[in-house]
Each structure stands twice: as C-alpha cells, then as structure tokens.
Image (cartoon, rainbow, N blue to C red):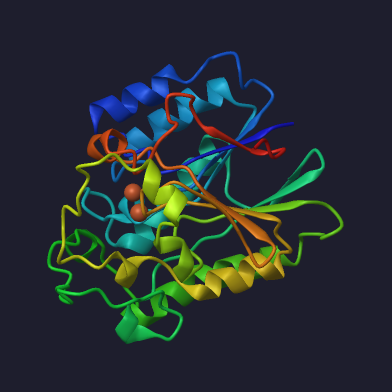
Length: 280
Ligand SMILES: [Fe+2]
Ligand SMILES: [Fe+2]
C-alpha cells in the first residue's frame, strides 16, 4: 500500500480543478491519498473533488484548511458550523477524518488552526522587517467567523484530536496530517530549497508576515504523542521534505499558478507525492 500527499488544491481556480481531473484514473487504485486542506470555500466544489478522487484512490483522508472554513456561503452561520458541515460531507463521501489503520500503517488526521502571536506562546511567529502587523490583506479576517473567543480556536480543534490519539498503537508506523504548520523552522527555506526557486520570484506581499498565521507548536506535541514517523501538512504553499528531531515533515502543495511558475511549489506534473514507503 502506497500513501500519497497533496494539499492546497484551491480548485476555485480552473487550472487547479483541471489538475485534479488529470490525476491518473489507473495508477493509484490501491493507494491512499492524504489531502491536507484548502480545497475550496464552496462545499459543492469540495464534494466534487472528493467524488473525482474517490474514483482514483482506494482511500482518501482529509483535514480542513482555513479556506475550507470560510463562512461566506449561505447556510454556514460561522466557521465551526462550516467545519461540522464539512465533517458531514466527508462521512457522506467516505472520506476519512479520524485515525485509521490502513494495512500496516496508522494514518492520523489532526485538526488545527493557527495561533496569532498576541494570543499565545505556541504561535510560530518570527519578526519580519517592514511587516504590517494588522494583517489587513489576510482574507481569513473577513471570511472566518468564530462563535467562541479568538484565543480558544486553536484549543477547540486540538481538543477534538485528543480522544482519538489514544486509539493509535505505536508498534506500527504512524503518519499524521494537518493543514497548519507544527514548527517554526519549516517556514523558512533551506539553501537547497532556495536554489530551486526561479530567478525573478519575489515576495508579492512584503508587508505580510506569514509566520503570524502559520500554525502552532502544540501541533508538534500531538504529532510526537502520536508517535509519528512522518507528518504531512500544507498551508504555506512551499515544498518541504525535512527530518527534524527524528520526524520527517513533508509539504506538497498545488498552490497558485504563479507559485508553480516560480517553483515555490514544484514537481506537480508528476501528480501527488508518494510519501510512504519513502522513495528518495
Ligand atoms: Fe492554501
Ligand atoms: Fe491554508
């Protein structure tokens, strides 16, 4: 059994939806796909993606990203209501959102959100010269609505994971997945990652400091409590494949067209990335 990863499908863009359609109908019939969030803010588009990928893979796992939890549509009163609607959709579409043993590997979805620096020490914040701390251009500020206090959002999602983590037996390999980042180091490119980026790529939003909305270090605590050997995540739209303190962290985002053109995300012509068994 092989496990593949993809995230940030963002199928509101036509070329991204075409990418999903072009994934092989035959190559992955016995395989598992981990979808690490940011499919679309529109439920019917998420459903269409699940239907398409269910035809191509044996098993689909999913965790919602921030775009998936936007409460812009009629019918979602807030972002937790939207989360519950997404969970119902996953159940209807046979998309797995709880830990499950697939053959001899545990796959463990971890729900999460990001900690703003002013709301907790588990924020992944790192200062950036010239940043605008108001996050004026960050769309979550307009499109997410929380019926709970802002500082309670991370804990709401992480607490959903806690009862399931005890189900995982660590005598078998464990793969976890989240949308958000679990460690600050992952935000920054290594020299070899930087060399892959096309000359001419530039920071499109110099005033935006992604680390404010990157994730939470409390996710890494859950990853390690689960005994993970491998963690798959998304959100930043950067390719990563690194081992940190004994855990391999992989991000394979489809992202946006400009990010693909600049090789900030790359190797997407080959489809989703095989993450298990490890091929180097
Ligand atoms: Fe995204
Ligand atoms: Fe995201």
